[in-house]
Length: 389
Image (cartoon, rainbow, N blue to C red; front, top):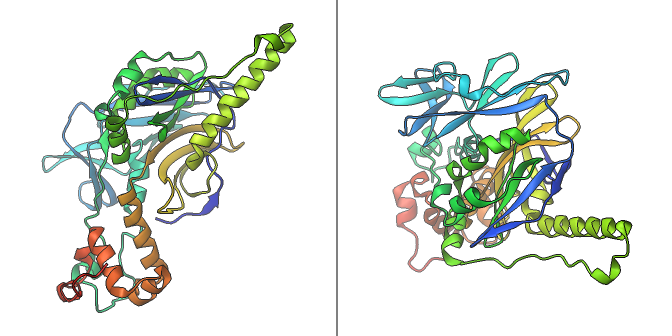
């Protein structure tokens, strides 16, 4: 996965933060659009077949060389105009065949993560676009045929590469929260916190798109940590903003107090969601659609911090039009971090160990514990001294 630039986090340009709503350990913070436009709409197309799907990433549509496999409940269809004219979302009107979905040997196969359907229409697979980018991180494996690596690693890289996630319907309290909470008039998204840990950020281009897809949150996938937090914590403390009655003498004072309250809500939310709103993210542009760019991103992969992957559609003016994020678990961060260090040091174990400040045997133990034992010849790991840490 190659990133073309590193920039600050997603930010909230063009969005307003509304007061949070909490249910059990789940806190949803509504995001409202300051100025609603009509030139970008997002529709959904549900796949009724609950079998796992494969997405051909390289090669022919019927016989891909590299494939991504997962449960994929739906696709998004993006409609836009270049001149600012209004457009209507039409994702549900497209057939499986139009979306490039076909049966190949009993498996439901889609061709490409992102596919141009026709002028002004783009099909992509929400969150899977981000996860596929994460899985492809240094997927090719060693660039140099070092003697320690197995024939499989040198010939096929990290194939197969796997990561786990949990459907939102299994995150305790999320389905009830999504069903019960109020949807605001100009709401286009929300920040999802579980035990006040940022689980996801969701933004859609238009309030009507959000209303149609609000309940689809439970069909998104979430990280293992989010699932565990929902089980371990019963509730979250309320964040209350005090308006002192003695300070309110007229409407101007009331307006000023409301402005301060909104600023306080925004600051509180931004602090809790700093991992995607403020911290630097690395980006890769996937497709350009008129004045919009579909991009995926990833945190800097610091093992001692929160890390997220995700995808976004950004207008040329910098406004965020669409976004979905996924919080990585500590184990997922460790795996990606080790791969990055290996790649930065040309997959040379001695150089990588030195960069990490450990011995080569200790590095091999970390790689084995991270699930990368298959990258090495059997004797390399077999000869590790007892008690190596």
